[in-house]
Length: 101
Image (cartoon, rainbow, N blue to C red):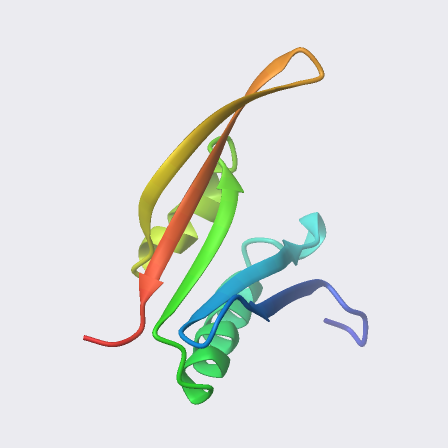
């Protein structure tokens, strides 16, 4: 935006059938302007072009806006894990999107 990077998203190969969404970030001053949706659409298109059958991602339960975006694009919650980090409970979530019927 305005010639400056304001977000990033990455796709990493897990195996022949599975891609992993990584490094998904939109700078606070660029949020709410559709950049997250654009990045997500690019990541899904990229994965489909490479014929992955699914995309997985790990997130934290307190990232409410990100979870809404994942749900919007059809990801579903498939696993949760609780951990203690710096004296606080952290709930990690694994989400999955099937790219083929």
